[in-house]
Image (tube, rainbow, N blue to C red):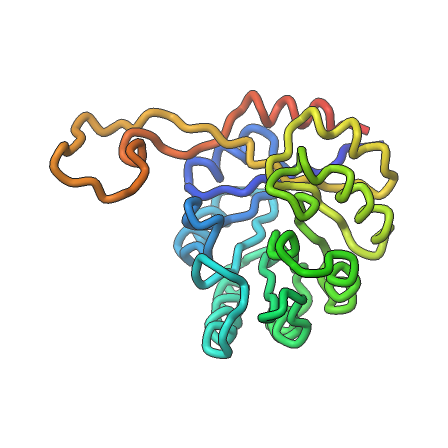
Length: 247
């Protein structure tokens, strides 16, 4: 019967290349892990499209922080979509809320229109919306193809029952893609739903930096390990996911 699709978010070129090598089915290309993901560079997309044969969905987020965007920020997001589309992005990932915590349908539709039919994912902005069940209906009405969610909780471990409820609510009208702390041990419970077709797992790991020198005078990050390690992806975790995702 095939396999449930595994998408992995990647924040480095190394992680993207290894994700494809290790068996990830699709990547979500982002920058700035510390902010939860922002729009990556065009150069990164072009480089990866030349080397990878798996779909690349691109995060479209002009800054960290909230998901209430000004009209100027929406214009930038539309331009990013148009430019990234012209360089081969296979899909786009974004989400817009209004000041009351509801999905901003008007601005979302503007961005979906800019994508010109390429699939769009509403990301975990959903998890901080005011009314999740109504938000899901709005997201479907806007024309999103999938929703990434941890079940309105910090991690999927906490939100698992809610995600299962969202799968049942959505049925086959939109893909509900569980993610946000997803672990291989969650898959058995999620597979109880006949509507589970895709999951989103970071599979992340850090490797030691190759730099032999570390300054003891200047610290450019609040993270004391920022210059001692590099974010990449774990072959073992990808393999474990793919094993349990077989139908």
